[in-house]
Length: 112
Image (cartoon, rainbow, N blue to C red; front, side):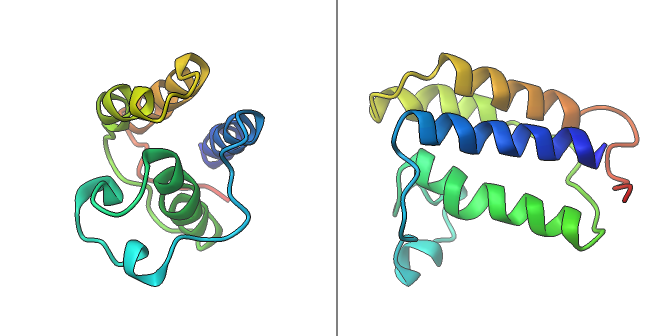
């Protein structure tokens, strides 16, 4: 399971790089401290993917933790990505695969 998640995280990073929105410097400390879902009040969705989502999921896997049960990132991504004027088709497919993977039974157990 964790290998499939890592492949999807790598695909998200690759697609953000392809679209030249993978940033070299992280968002501000204040932006990262947002308690709003997807940090929508402090950063663009692509930034949230880069600075919050990808690192947190990688940290869970690296630490042998439990992945979340269920995921519904795609519904927000469908609204947020067009606002950034990104080519969202491939990114939405990757996010949809992640959501689907997190909804499978027994997904919460990370294997090393």
